[in-house]
Image (cartoon, rainbow, N blue to C red; front, side):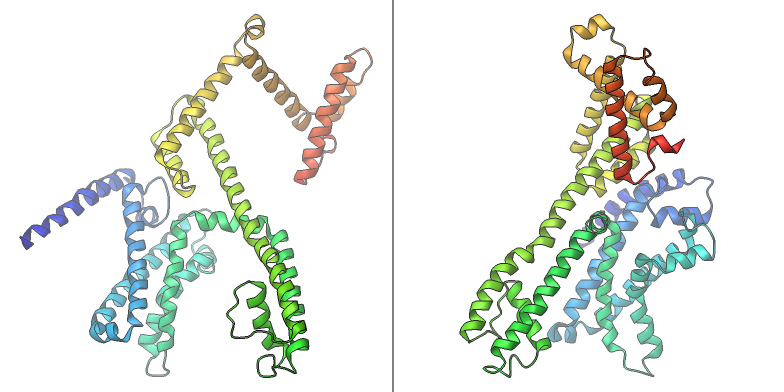
Length: 412
């Protein structure tokens, strides 16, 4: 019966063999470096084999990190010492091959085209440094163990967890959110820092004489201030004087609001960024549907974006269907005659919005000064037409100021 377990190998072949055939078909006639790039970098040429490689790397990251955690348990490490060494060696070999493949093929990525400078630029990137830190402790310990005790570097193997950030779009979205909301976050951080220093100073002032061992100086009081403002309250350091306790009550209530600001800002901005990116995907669907259908390559782009935005297949299909309906509705409204529009209010409103959008584009992209002069010519346009043009011009100028671009009236 145990021999029947070998059937699992055939199940693996059922997945890998079609993926390899698809990869060969997609990369027929391409160079070796381009094929390596398709294996380890997201592209239209990777197919299912690229997904298998990604899942393989992710699995080994999880396995190696679990091994590091379990190795810290003396009873387990004593029994499985040799197994842990073999497992770590295999993990380092896999991560080293991946690192070399990325360094070799990175010149196929936009922005890293030059063979030497491109690879050096990539080597200084955060993702490349994380990959290097995942394997560097092993080689340093192997080649330099006779000169210095480097066993402390083993804890840095937990840095392999950061490799997982490459395989999720959440970290990219979070990075965009932090960059966008950085002024608010920095202001909140400044207020928190100011409040921590003030709290530590007051705690030292009120409690130093009563508890000189716990409130020895202001730097030591900072620990108590952070614990109090964050509403953690470990209890190892606490005020005993009436003034100190009264101050603690006030500061604990302030800390609830002050320390919650960054979390609230990040939560709101993260949701807003996901909405923006989903709207962007919807607009891209409109462009893809310009020819009335979605090709296999476009479907791959949609699936990749959907995976990054955590959209299920059903949600993506609903977006595509909605884009189809809206595109057909716009096309239908564009060919309706005036008598037909009079009997269809919804279609008339869509035509009205479309015409306003075209006027807005003329104000933004056209020769605005000359057009304005013609519109303002007496007898050329009516008062209502001039008022509409002035309103559209004012809106376009406001949008230019908000975007930081020169207004249309000066761009020509």
